[in-house]
Length: 421
RNA sequence: GUGGCUGUAGCUCAGUUGGUUAGAGCGUCAGGUUGUGGCCCUGAAGGCCGGGGGUUCGAGACCCCUCAGUCACCCCA
Image (cartoon, rainbow, N blue to C red; front, side, top):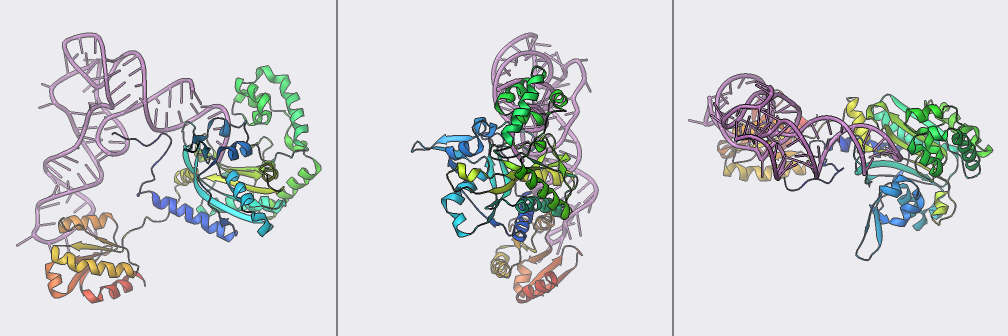
């Protein structure tokens, strides 16, 4: 083996691509019903876009970005997530001027240079939505419903849907102060990591996986008791709307989203079938991002979800990915003369929308039959010297094993009747 | 960046206290049927035992280094 796939990347092979198509189709279908329009942005952006929007202090920016200089000495970065790109496109194309509310979704690869593990790759795929232009809580709830509908319709069970509010620029500083005061008292018993976070991002200590940290912070103050009037009312409405839609949720006062730009609503959808990286998707409101990127102040809410993780969960729950595509007709070809007859015939059938495979002429009939079986072909059409001479073919139903003769010029009619009842 | 585990055929894995020529199942290919798939039977192809060094009369096995995969920490989808 001379060449290897880069660390943390995966080939999606022909034998499993149908799974991807299946979930992608479901995603697009749900997006259509919620009236979200797709947006495609470049896979790389100027580095500054990400460092500004996501936050210099986050791991995503601090150590996980694929950043490089192009030949013009510009610093570019492979997108680690999509919200920044979408916001940039929104501002740059003045989408807010065309309509007051922009609802977009995306689906595609993201890149983060981390150590791979279960459910975490360096190139991975996300889908997500951004609902830009309204601060109304019904939009928060709509994005949640989009994500949950996709999971529900794919048949996923046992999800944990957690919500929280992380406040805004008026109430969060007050809370932060209270939290830091509390944490200072137990500082020396905290893990080394958490002691560092006390300075950089104290709220993250609350969702530390360290057992001791968890116990030490059992009675720590939580954001939701420090929310300002506006944030509190917003959070209440979100909950009431979820209840009205009969969507089960859990309030998790320790839920903190990783990226700097979140305000008010934060949510996460978890599955127990994922191993340590248990988040299937997460989202929240980011009312301040547009402004921080130089646009008009524009409230927005959205989520991002991992497709690899989704597939892991579906496999763990033994859910269906539909059927792998298979040929309607497999031509078994015996000899040069037969091949000459088959080529135009196959062309005609393909134009009529039949999926056709032509067996390898240099292999035996038996080998071609075996191949047709392995490929799950619905019908086999056998054409050899005899058939060509009589302007006929043998058509075999691979399910029943029945075989009969058929004039070449009636083949499409016969197949039409057989395959499209 | 740190730690645990694992690297033998395309895949999943055996391989005894170090001992002749490296094993199985599945898959692939061919034959058993001059032109008929699945089941069955027979056979074949396919291995620098991850790489390098060391110990030894002798290493797939033991030691060291290294690379890769995997899981976990950190963090996140």
